[in-house]
Length: 162
Image 1 (cartoon, helix red, strand yellow):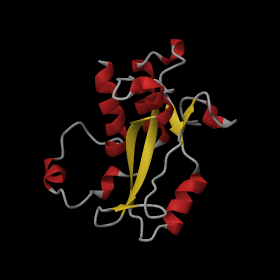
Image 2 (tube, one colour):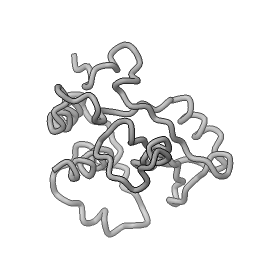
Image 3 (tube, one colour):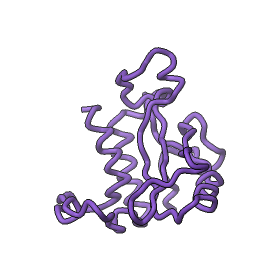
Image 4 (cartoon, rainbow, N blue to C red):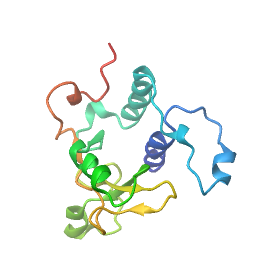
Protein backbone atom coordinates (compact mmCIF):
# COMPACT_ATOMS: atom_id res chain seq x y z
CA UNK A 1 0.00 0.00 0.00
CA UNK A 2 2.75 2.46 0.95
CA UNK A 3 4.54 1.84 -2.34
CA UNK A 4 1.48 3.19 -4.14
CA UNK A 5 1.39 6.33 -1.99
CA UNK A 6 4.50 7.77 -3.64
CA UNK A 7 2.74 7.46 -6.97
CA UNK A 8 -0.39 9.07 -5.54
CA UNK A 9 1.69 11.87 -4.01
CA UNK A 10 3.34 12.46 -7.39
CA UNK A 11 -0.02 12.54 -9.12
CA UNK A 12 -1.13 15.14 -6.58
CA UNK A 13 1.38 17.53 -8.11
CA UNK A 14 0.56 16.57 -11.67
CA UNK A 15 -3.19 16.28 -11.57
CA UNK A 16 -4.18 18.45 -8.62
CA UNK A 17 -7.92 18.04 -8.35
CA UNK A 18 -8.83 16.47 -11.70
CA UNK A 19 -11.45 13.79 -11.98
CA UNK A 20 -10.47 10.12 -11.77
CA UNK A 21 -10.55 9.45 -15.52
CA UNK A 22 -7.30 9.16 -17.41
CA UNK A 23 -6.81 11.88 -20.00
CA UNK A 24 -5.65 9.74 -22.93
CA UNK A 25 -5.42 12.78 -25.20
CA UNK A 26 -2.79 14.23 -22.83
CA UNK A 27 -0.82 10.98 -22.82
CA UNK A 28 -0.76 10.92 -26.63
CA UNK A 29 0.71 14.44 -26.85
CA UNK A 30 4.24 13.85 -25.62
CA UNK A 31 5.44 17.11 -27.17
CA UNK A 32 3.25 19.42 -25.05
CA UNK A 33 2.16 19.81 -21.47
CA UNK A 34 -1.44 20.63 -20.73
CA UNK A 35 -1.46 23.83 -18.66
CA UNK A 36 -4.54 22.62 -16.80
CA UNK A 37 -2.33 20.19 -14.90
CA UNK A 38 -0.93 23.22 -13.05
CA UNK A 39 -3.91 25.13 -11.88
CA UNK A 40 -5.18 26.82 -8.79
CA UNK A 41 -7.65 24.87 -6.68
CA UNK A 42 -9.78 25.89 -3.70
CA UNK A 43 -8.18 25.50 -0.28
CA UNK A 44 -10.92 23.09 0.85
CA UNK A 45 -10.15 20.78 -2.09
CA UNK A 46 -6.43 20.97 -1.33
CA UNK A 47 -7.10 20.17 2.34
CA UNK A 48 -9.24 17.17 1.35
CA UNK A 49 -6.34 15.86 -0.73
CA UNK A 50 -3.76 16.60 1.97
CA UNK A 51 -5.86 15.03 4.74
CA UNK A 52 -6.34 11.88 2.66
CA UNK A 53 -2.57 11.52 2.29
CA UNK A 54 -1.88 12.32 5.95
CA UNK A 55 -4.50 9.85 7.16
CA UNK A 56 -3.06 7.18 4.86
CA UNK A 57 0.29 7.42 6.67
CA UNK A 58 -1.41 7.71 10.09
CA UNK A 59 0.36 11.00 10.75
CA UNK A 60 -0.98 11.42 14.30
CA UNK A 61 1.29 8.59 15.44
CA UNK A 62 4.03 9.16 12.91
CA UNK A 63 6.91 11.60 13.28
CA UNK A 64 9.21 10.13 10.64
CA UNK A 65 7.21 10.05 7.39
CA UNK A 66 7.24 13.00 5.08
CA UNK A 67 4.28 15.40 5.34
CA UNK A 68 5.53 18.20 3.12
CA UNK A 69 8.65 19.88 1.77
CA UNK A 70 9.55 23.56 1.93
CA UNK A 71 11.47 25.23 -0.90
CA UNK A 72 13.03 28.67 -0.62
CA UNK A 73 11.12 31.08 -2.88
CA UNK A 74 14.19 33.26 -3.41
CA UNK A 75 15.98 30.29 -4.97
CA UNK A 76 13.06 29.63 -7.34
CA UNK A 77 12.95 33.33 -8.28
CA UNK A 78 16.70 33.29 -8.87
CA UNK A 79 16.31 30.23 -11.09
CA UNK A 80 13.58 31.96 -13.11
CA UNK A 81 15.24 35.38 -13.32
CA UNK A 82 18.83 34.29 -13.99
CA UNK A 83 18.19 31.30 -16.24
CA UNK A 84 19.77 31.54 -19.68
CA UNK A 85 16.39 30.87 -21.31
CA UNK A 86 12.76 31.57 -20.42
CA UNK A 87 11.51 29.12 -17.79
CA UNK A 88 8.04 27.77 -18.60
CA UNK A 89 7.73 24.95 -16.04
CA UNK A 90 9.42 23.25 -13.15
CA UNK A 91 9.77 19.50 -12.91
CA UNK A 92 9.65 18.20 -9.32
CA UNK A 93 11.50 14.90 -8.91
CA UNK A 94 11.58 12.78 -5.78
CA UNK A 95 15.11 11.80 -4.86
CA UNK A 96 17.13 10.33 -2.04
CA UNK A 97 19.14 12.87 -0.04
CA UNK A 98 22.89 12.65 -0.55
CA UNK A 99 23.38 12.07 3.20
CA UNK A 100 21.07 9.05 2.96
CA UNK A 101 22.96 7.67 -0.05
CA UNK A 102 26.40 8.41 1.40
CA UNK A 103 25.55 6.57 4.62
CA UNK A 104 25.31 3.30 2.68
CA UNK A 105 21.74 3.46 1.37
CA UNK A 106 22.27 3.72 -2.39
CA UNK A 107 19.21 2.28 -4.17
CA UNK A 108 17.62 1.37 -0.83
CA UNK A 109 13.87 1.78 -0.48
CA UNK A 110 13.14 4.57 1.99
CA UNK A 111 9.37 4.66 1.98
CA UNK A 112 8.34 8.19 2.95
CA UNK A 113 11.04 8.82 5.51
CA UNK A 114 11.80 12.51 5.76
CA UNK A 115 15.47 11.86 6.56
CA UNK A 116 15.83 10.12 3.18
CA UNK A 117 13.69 12.07 0.68
CA UNK A 118 14.07 15.39 -1.04
CA UNK A 119 12.92 17.11 -4.23
CA UNK A 120 15.21 17.90 -7.10
CA UNK A 121 13.71 20.75 -9.09
CA UNK A 122 14.64 21.38 -12.71
CA UNK A 123 13.35 24.14 -14.95
CA UNK A 124 12.10 23.48 -18.47
CA UNK A 125 11.50 25.77 -21.40
CA UNK A 126 8.43 25.83 -23.64
CA UNK A 127 10.06 23.17 -25.83
CA UNK A 128 10.38 20.82 -22.83
CA UNK A 129 14.17 20.91 -22.71
CA UNK A 130 15.82 21.33 -19.33
CA UNK A 131 17.23 24.72 -18.40
CA UNK A 132 20.13 24.47 -15.98
CA UNK A 133 21.17 27.17 -13.57
CA UNK A 134 24.82 28.22 -14.04
CA UNK A 135 24.99 25.79 -17.02
CA UNK A 136 24.92 22.60 -14.90
CA UNK A 137 22.91 23.07 -11.68
CA UNK A 138 19.37 22.32 -10.55
CA UNK A 139 17.62 23.20 -7.30
CA UNK A 140 17.76 20.93 -4.26
CA UNK A 141 17.78 21.25 -0.49
CA UNK A 142 14.10 21.24 0.18
CA UNK A 143 13.51 20.79 3.87
CA UNK A 144 10.97 18.46 5.47
CA UNK A 145 8.13 20.14 7.33
CA UNK A 146 7.92 19.07 10.12
CA UNK A 147 10.40 19.48 11.68
CA UNK A 148 11.79 22.35 9.58
CA UNK A 149 8.61 24.42 9.27
CA UNK A 150 8.61 28.20 9.52
CA UNK A 151 6.60 29.60 12.43
CA UNK A 152 3.02 30.55 11.69
CA UNK A 153 0.31 28.82 9.68
CA UNK A 154 2.85 26.79 7.71
CA UNK A 155 3.55 24.73 10.86
CA UNK A 156 0.15 23.06 10.41
CA UNK A 157 0.01 19.94 8.25
CA UNK A 158 -3.01 21.40 6.39
CA UNK A 159 -3.84 24.80 4.93
CA UNK A 160 -5.81 27.37 6.91
CA UNK A 161 -9.27 27.28 5.37
CA UNK A 162 -11.10 30.03 7.23
